[in-house]
Length: 386
Image (cartoon, rainbow, N blue to C red; front, side):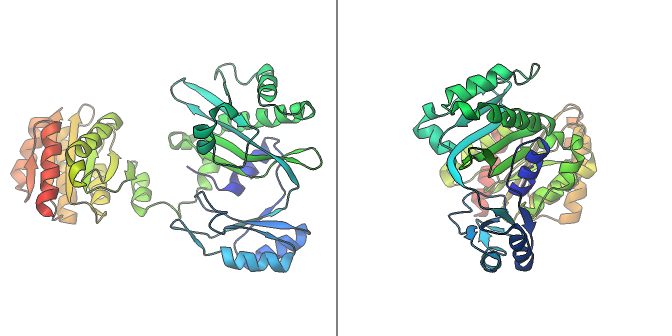
């Protein structure tokens, strides 16, 4: 779950990280009032879950309240990479002398949080990592021990930070780590962390991504979730307790288990890539899925107009194949799909599940014994439909 910039920075403030004291506006009139209250030069920043706001015209400097209102009129309602801007952040302009990059993220390979920082902030960290990886200082944190004071000092020294800023940097880094840890974040990023003309550090921009699997522990953050930029199908899947990510292919995949789901996607890509055919989604109904969840999953898959075939790959463990079969029939009778369906049921109660499907005499049904066979038949079905 992504937080907007203003949500991220307000969260940072709760952990003692200094931020510009701006406010959010949903109308040009509100932007005018905020700019007038702040006084002086302000920055109007589009709030949307997308990068490249500045290049798209979503970040503008205003010298007074009237100019802030005009900029807000231009930015609100703007389309940036398919997302409509509904709010702007009005921040007092900062006297930026130096930009620092600072972030904490998950390093799955090491099984530890990873701190990344650089004196070359304000730019795309992926680009910097690709062109000049030596400009980034990296430090792992033992999740049991937490961030240690000596690590703060080592990082500040390694990145070449002026010694006069080490103490304030250490406090900000400690606050960011606490925010990252207590918020169950996958990423907590400040870019840039500005060195101002007064010789102080200020988090001018912020980004936080929360682990969806931990949202049950974060009721306050969950309540603030902005779903306006999410596909409708992903919203419905979340409500049904289904893990679903929309992709650009033609084969809708319903699978139980994340690993099996990724393998199924890989196989459809393997046999269909030459013809431009691939998976239309990642969908994991999980273990122990009920017939109602299976039916909901099929409805979500079929809501995608790009889907020309549905591939069921179910290995019954906790999930029983007969329950999956009943779910398929429930959804089929409701939706009446006209696309072919390839069904592979193996494992617990597979024979009963296959009998239920067979007795239903579903049109355009294609059965498969192995995943290879299922992927090949799904690709062939899409080609025939084309």
